[in-house]
Image 1 (cartoon, rainbow, N blue to C red):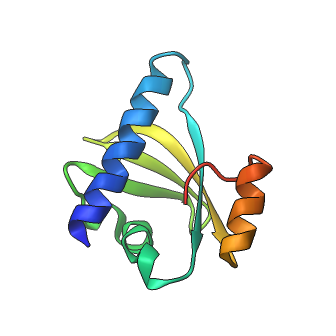
Image 2 (image 1 turned 180 degrees about the vertical axis):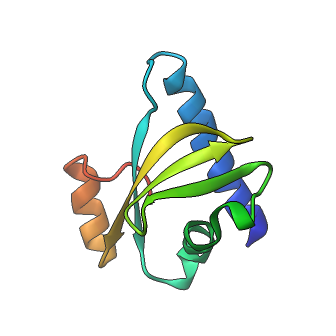
Length: 103
């Protein structure tokens, strides 16, 4: 579980760095998840925040359960908008409508 979370945060961080290099303001990503055990690492990261950083990264709540800053070594690198999705078909629909960038 820790490895999956590390990989997910590393991918988000790389994307955030590449976008941040091109823009002055923080990149904004919509992250969708279905409330299942597959997304437990994301839920733990949202709940634990700075209490459990992984590779110097954690999620700082701006609006709990809705909006977070992805932090790396104490500096914000991206803003994450969290979208709770009810089913796989809803995920596909939101992705097609560009309402979710990651699941």
